[in-house]
Length: 392
Image 1: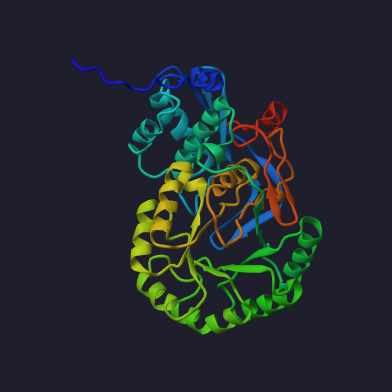
Image 2 (image 1 turned 90 degrees about the vertical axis):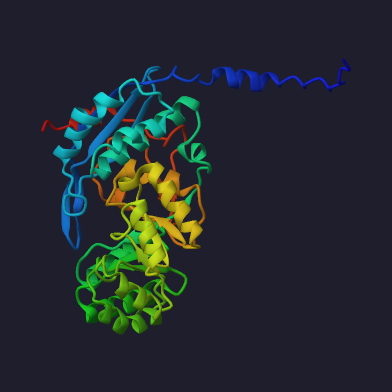
């Protein structure tokens, strides 16, 4: 039998061999423990929106500890008026239902994680926190950032400032203060209640910040389709970049009708809570921009939503659900994996009087500077956790 002369295989570089040997083999690294820790941290001032407000950060800190001691963390914000979850319900569903079934799961088995989570209806913040905490643990074990694990690289991201609801004078004064203190160059303005007030505020804000600042508005479904058509010329006059959920979320025909009659992209948020929702809205043609909120879709479903947006040539940007430090930074790692023409919503953490992490993200010149380090770059401060922990 004739023997083929094959070239000898090149030896793998020593560094590659060492790195490969350091990686966990299937089944070696497992989930050892899952904790859901309720905390209450005071805010500098209440955060209000159309369907509610919060006066404290009454979130749940989720901690996943792996068999080698690595800990991944995430922050679950309860929003009963939006998702139907409370601090109590998040802690209970995680500790009593998810944790027992996820114990000893392979630490890199994200599909296995969601096979368990999908057995239960609802609970988006609880599920998303578990998803992101496991990604954080994986990245910390590997010594890389979550951005890198997700296919990107950590970077400074342009962020907007959501102006607190108040009189027009108060909101403009806050904008001036935020420019001086943080250098913001992008703004999110709550509209949809008083049309004359909305026009006056947006005109005054544009005069204050100049033509090179991005202004997006969030109507929280406050307008009818007719209201939006009447307001669109005024929004175009002040060069509004995005109109987020201007009319009722389920008025698909109305959104499409309006989207075809204004040059300003209508952005989906309340109508786009799941990948299924997003696909429905994109196929309908009523939105031309999209908000991704990792607090309700984790990293796994956020990637699915981003893929849908790209498939429909629709720009996306990251939003937050009044998230605090951990939530904003975790979402920013996801936002580091894609390009967008719009500023992200990662500034709500500056509204807190304190935080429970050792490290501190920074907003400078209107950009969020991520803390260095593996995972999301944050670790829990035991003293702060003890100070703010509550028993339910």
